[in-house]
Amino acid sequence: MMGRLHRLVIVLAWLGVSCAPAAQPPAKPTGAPAAPAATAAPASAAAASPAASPPSPPVTVRAAIVRSASDSGIFLADEKGYFREQGIEIDITQMNAAQQQVPLLGTGQLEVGSGGTAAGLVNAVALDVPMRIVADKGSTPPGFGYQAVVVRKDLVDSGAFRGCASFKGMRVANPAIENSSGPMYARMLAECGLEFSDIDMVAMGFPDMPAAFRNGAIDASNMLEPLLTRTLDEGFAALYKRTDEIYPYQQNAALLYGPQFMANQRDVAQRFMVAYVQGLRYYNDAFTKGLNKADVVAILARNTKVDPSVVERMTPVGLNPDGYINMDAFAADVDWWTSQGFIKTRVDPAEVVDNSFVDYAIARLGRYAQ
Image (cartoon, rainbow, N blue to C red):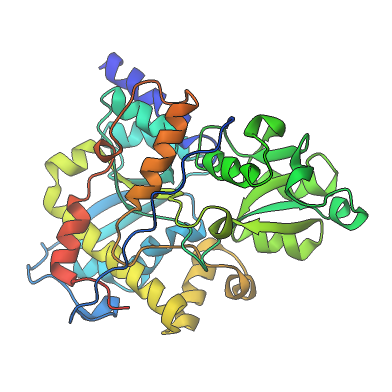
C-alpha cells in the first residue's frame, strides 16, 4: 500500500500548482485531427441519448474541477440535466490546487478529475499508476486561443519590446515547468532562433500574474481565460500572440478517470461520458453555431463566478464535440518532453489515453454534425 501511495505522489509533478521547459523546439506538429464526420445524428447535445435505462436511484459520481472555463462540459452536462438523464448525480468539488486530486483518484475517493497535460503524467504511467486520460478538456484549434502570451504594457509602449527576439533575457511567468507551456514556448521562440533557455522562467500561479505585471515583477507570461481578458482590460499587459496561432490544436487539458472507477463502475463511467459529450456539444453549438449562446454564457458565468460581460467577450476554450483528445499533438509534446529529459522512461502516448469511454458515447450519440 505504501509503495502504491508513493507512486501516486509522483503524479503531483504532472498536475502541479496549476495544471510548463528547455531548449530545442519540438518536431513540427503531426497535424490537426481530422474533422469529425457528419452523420445523420443530431447536432444538438440534447437530441440523443442511449437507449439503456439508467438505474434508479441515481449513482453519485465524485468529480474534482478547478472551476475554470475548460470545465464547461461538466457545467453544462450538470445544469442541462444530461447527468441526471444518465442516472448520475454529480458531486463536484473545487480544488484550488489540482495536485490535491491525485491521491483521491488513486485511492477511489474521487471518480473523475481534471488537469493539464504534462510530463509527470507520462512518468506516472511508466511507474504503473493506472489513471488515464479519457477525454478532451481544453485545446487550441484555430479561433479557440483561450491561452495567450502577454507582455508588460510599459515595455511595449516604450519600444523596449519589439517582437520575438525581445524575449531574450525576459522574466516570463508560468505556473509550473514540464507542462504544455514548454512545447508552446519552444515553438514560439524558435521563430526567431531563440531557445527556452534564453528566457528567465519564473514559477508563478495564474492568479498572481496580474499583480506581478502591475508591480513590474515579470515581463511576460502565458495566461488563460477568463483571467486573460480581465488582465488585458486592466491595461498592464498587452497581447503578443494567442496559443492557437503559436501552436494550433495543442492539447492543454484533459478529463481523467480513476482506476477503480474504470474497473469497478464501468457502466457508470460510460454513462458519465455520454452526458459529458452532450455537454461539450451544447457548448460547441453555442460558440460555433450561435445556438443558445446566451444560455451557455449565463451558465458559465454562474459556475466560474465571472461577470457575464467578460464571458461574452473572452475567447472560448477549444472543446472537441466528439470528446477525443488530439493524439497527434499530445504525442508531439510527449516526444518533446522526452527529448528534454522530463520523461524518464519512454512511454507510448497511447498507453496514457483510454478512448473506450468516448467510443461508447459516440456509438450512442453519433458523430457531431458540423
